[in-house]
Length: 235
Ligand SMILES: Nc1ncnc2c1ncn2[C@@H]1O[C@H](COP(=O)(O)OP(=O)(O)O)[C@@H](O)[C@H]1O
Ligand SMILES: [Mg+2]
Image 1 (cartoon, rainbow, N blue to C red):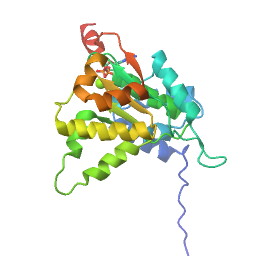
Image 2: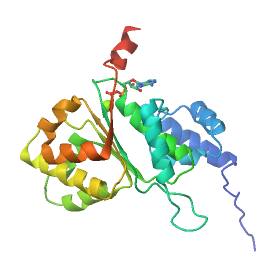
Image 3: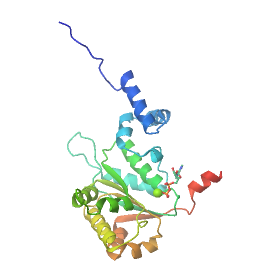
Image 4: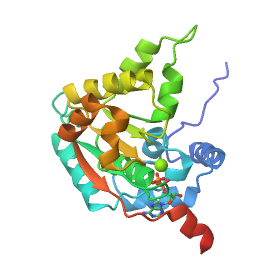
């Protein structure tokens, strides 16, 4: 009787690396960059980076804003292991409100901050959405359970809520924002919020209930009014 043997598929074997190279290429990620990152930050596997689910544009984002780094440190310090010997997980922590003009680098810092936490070896369950996408996804329509989706976003341990204040406001968006922020405020879940609005204009857009909670739960950062996208094309 013949027995078929299969090459064991370990991370170091040719097959796996080839497959990984294909996945990286499909996602527009330069494998050389990934390998350099992996070497730079031990212990850190390529699989970690892939599973972190970063969008290609911000895959290499490195948080370097002092307030953002301080936030990441606070969140890392608050992380707890669910059981003895288990990897520490992001649980509760402070939030950050990053305000600045389009192209100032807010989304970059937000993803950079998540990457920083992942690289420091913490277990990070996170999600990212723009406020506009979230409202679109939550619009009641047949076949979707909007309440369930809102609950999932609201209780995700770490959330990037991008471009708050960019979508057209209505009583309905105000209510959704209130329920989301109130949930995260109550459970003290770390949230990275970006906005194009000036902090002083946020209250008018978001309403008092949300604005007052944001004041208490976030550290606020105003970015330099420089559009990095425009600078890049001009250079
Ligand atoms: N510190 C940085 N170093 C290198 N590129 C950056 C940095 N900050 C932002 N960028 C790049 O500048 C562009 C605009 O940044 P982004 O974070 O999308 O701006 P915003 O979210 O404020 O509109 C993006 O292409 C981003 O990758
Ligand atoms: Mg952005």
